[in-house]
Amino acid sequence: MSDIEARPNKYPLPPLLTIGTLVVCYVLDQTLPLGWEPEQVTRFMRGTGGLLIIAAIALDIWAFLTFRKHNANMMPHKAASQLLMSGPFAHSRNPIYLANVVLTVGAGFLLGSRWFLLGAVVLFFLLSELAIKREEKHMEALFGDQWKDYCKAVRRWA
Image 1 (cartoon, rainbow, N blue to C red):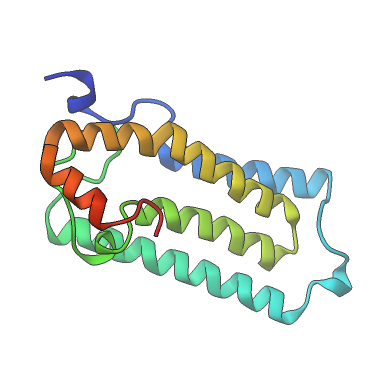
Image 2 (image 1 turned 45 degrees about the horizontal axis):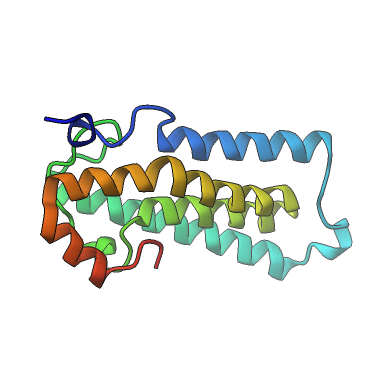
């Protein structure tokens, strides 16, 4: 079994990319504020941020429950045990990563900080380059044509 078949990711683990991005954005916001003026942060803006965070958490939970329902491995440093194509995976090949980016955008609106909006863009590229590309090679190595057909039917980020 090749290394790419054995596991999609070693370092950095995708959850650490998200946590690290959120922490860096928070620290930057506290030390070098790059937000809107307090009077510009409207209730609508905070409400939108809150709704985005709730939607991101709901998407994460749906994805986790789908893994659990199918008794599938969800750890990014271990081999995939099966190709999930139901639940949120019927709409996005990467619903958890999508939720992480949406959560970061939501935090930006909720906290009135542009750092989180910039962080969401950075996180999008970090996840794409350091996690998704590796995971897609892993899935293709394990599931071949079934993976290719799935990729034709379901978008990466949706």
